[in-house]
Image (tube, rainbow, N blue to C red; front, side):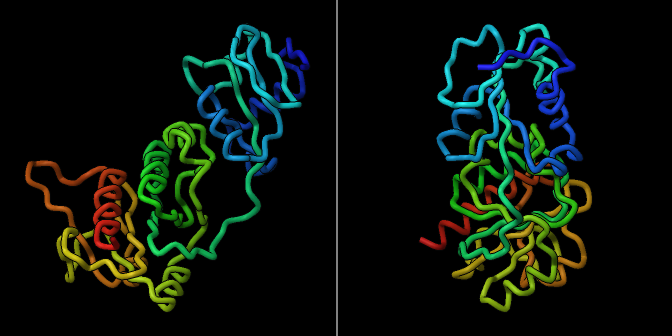
Length: 250
């Protein structure tokens, strides 16, 4: 175990830099905080580069490259207000996987909030769906996204930079593409419109599904609002539609 006692230590500065998207992209690495998240990463066989622990952490981790960081400076590495005393730096998987074969997928069209994205990852893991992300979505390696996924981050297949053209190719491959939106061909999400292979599309929190993507979708599906709310949170809507799709696939 190596000790870090100064904020000028190169390893300390590197870990801290991973709070920024620019540094994550440049290094091809990201940081995960918290005892559960680090243990989930280890259990999932993630490619861990190093683990940093605070002086007072009582938990132990079986890993070769462990740095012990002074409690006085450990908090500076963290994105959370109440750090648990452990951070893992993990290598990103090489490239996005566009060779999706899962018969149930969720496509996020510029979903921008990291917390929503983390919850959506957790939902996809629970329902057994793959996640497709358009250009302009929240960075899945954002610390808030990783935390909100509650460990599911390490379990699901995610394809990044999936374009409208890629969706069109999936249609040609037999996928039914359904938009969670209002349109001229809108039907209720509880109806059995889910094909053997289905992509459900959800849109940006403020602007919804883009016109370009809507033009590719076979139908729009809606979730009835009984109260005065204008709409549902994008993660909640995703969960309802994905579970309904899964129900019809039984």
